Length: 225
Image 1: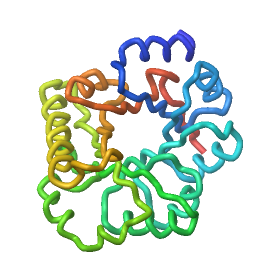
Image 2: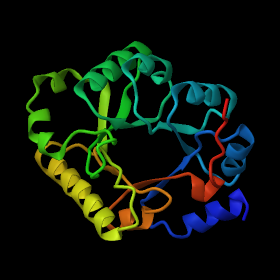
Image 3: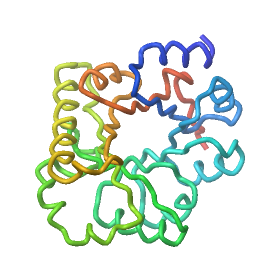
């Protein structure tokens, strides 16, 4: 199947209100343009240098989402243009995003990443830290950060019961935050969860944004250099 056929196939499975982030990391400009020409406008990258290069060379109406672990010293490179940062996992990175967004003269939508998987290698705030996070007075100083929702990744396993439970936990965290802290904030509305292998389970638990790469573009071929 072509990229066009795969995209159309995936779109047919997405309910109204669920956004598709086409994960384009390691993909060529030509492959991205194939997806772009079908109407796809939201793309996700996880390396700052690669994202900046693609932003410079590809159409400016693309919404670039940064979906990887973001280092503080790299924020300044994407702050002028990034449409959303998915994996915000510390107060330090929130403060840096705020500083660089102010410098760029814009606000940046961000998702709070929560560690809901059993794998220790994944990043994110611990669910038990929610209450502490929102007692920090520093949050009041983040006037250039737009809190837009939550993000998380399930355990890499074929056990759908485990995956479903972890997605359910993230959805519960979203509802808790929405009710307690963002009830009047229309910007806080996204649950970014679900990738190529598990996005239908994520949608079943309320995902509003799925991050799909290999199902669209095929398996990644990494440069060995």
